[in-house]
Length: 126
Image (cartoon, one colour):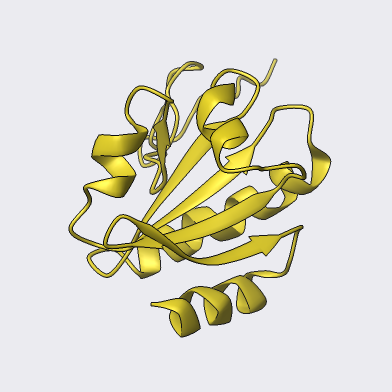
C-alpha cells in the first residue's frame, strides 16, 4: 500500500485560512472614514455575491490593489449588506467602480472589464 504524505516543503494551510487580501471590505458605517476622509485616492467596488461580473473582476482588482499599494486603496462595498451608500450615490448597476479623490467622486466605471482596462482607467483618473 502506498501512502501519500504532504511534502515537507509544501506549506500547509487550514481549510478556513485564506491568502491575504489586497482589497478591503467596507460598510455603510465605515464608508466616510475609509473613503471620504482617506489621504490617498480610493477605488470603491460596489458589488454583490450573486453578481457574476462582480466576481469576474474581483481577482483583477486584487492584483491592481497589490500593484498600486501606496498610490491608491481599493475597497469593496457589498450593496446587499450595505444599501445606504449605494442608494445615496444612485448606484443602479453593478459592478460599479467609483474613484474618490479628496473625498469627492472623480471617476466612475460601470460594468466588468479586463484588468488592463481597469488599470488604465484608474491610472488616468488618479
